[in-house]
Length: 153
Image 1 (cartoon, one colour):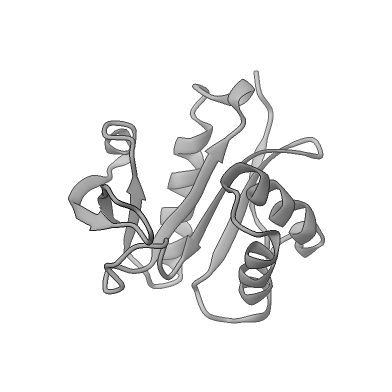
Image 2 (tube, rainbow, N blue to C red; image 1 turned 135 degrees about the vertical axis):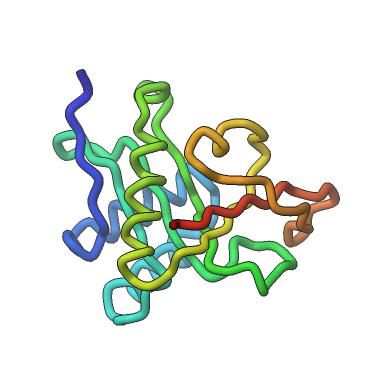
């Protein structure tokens, strides 16, 4: 059994540096970009951005964020779930699904009931209530990317 909990970084701001480094290592986006977004989430009453971690003991085993735009040309489709990642040794245990549920519920409580995300995975997100919406052009990408939508009812 994998005992873990999902937390919003607002609950434990002391994790911000560790979280920024972890996200950077997974997605190769500069640490400073993550730190800036995390700081904004900590210091603003706005519902976006938000950052979440799945933590087992003191180890980050998963992470997910909500930002305005996840590097694509459809600036009208906002906010975007981003940086969804679970460490390989913890995959296939429902952790990503729990993170997605947590984010959707939390954003609904903040008044946002429609979320978007881009992904190359074409069946994973459907399991969690996401629907294919359209194709979008990723910044600096040649190929189009799949955009999904989740509407909380």
